[in-house]
Length: 362
Image (spheres, rainbow, N blue to C red):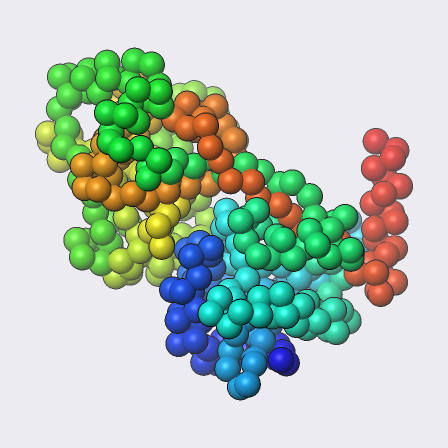
């Protein structure tokens, strides 16, 4: 086996076919590790001079068998500037893409880290976040004396495994929050609504509509509720452009919507669909319906729809073990973070030493 570091967009695009074949065969990766997600993110952010591609590709008998979708990012910490090596793009569950049919997962991962270590003159800090406990990457780190001590618990990702239940009626017995039926009936009676599932490729592109609703919600929270810390992710031009491009004819994006009888969006939930998972990542509601406990009504209708259509997805709620998520489930996925300063770099060790001193003084 040998590795190659991809640093140009042309090289990046040239591995599209192999990457997409591997991602379809690897059920352990999320949508955040797909070629389309990462390439679209890079297309939007490549103008940033503080970013560089650092994609480690492993080859066996001239065939691509492993991909570590990484990038270098120039960071500033007080008076110091340094290069951080991290996952390309963003997401709540990140991973390396491995040819699972090859059967040499350990060797492939070892070669990826050889590429990282042998190019340590390019980075001061290695920081890989949101590593799933179910991934071969996580277990490789756990078994490695060099990386184990730098791999720490990061966050819980609550999830609902619909395959564990025979029907919606069984699910409702212990997993639907109290009074949810009351909230559903109240919204039906006082407002009236229809529930729709919109696929961005086969139905229509709903991006513009959800942007408007999400921004209305954030304005309401800022002005009426005094939640000055709340911002819409669509207020960031780069994030908005990335998502705008990602939404185009994308069959992996589903949006669950409650429409009023007048045709207004009451509330929505957008997710990425990949393998057997739905990755929830954005919700919003129209402020004029704020008093209708919309999060519970929305979730009730989504789960009911999935059971009715015999879609046994695992609903991944994303990062954060919040009470409103655990009202619906007792299960979660744990993610971890590998964070370490380059042991062979004097600048990295100096920054790390200063950081430790400051931490002791706090």
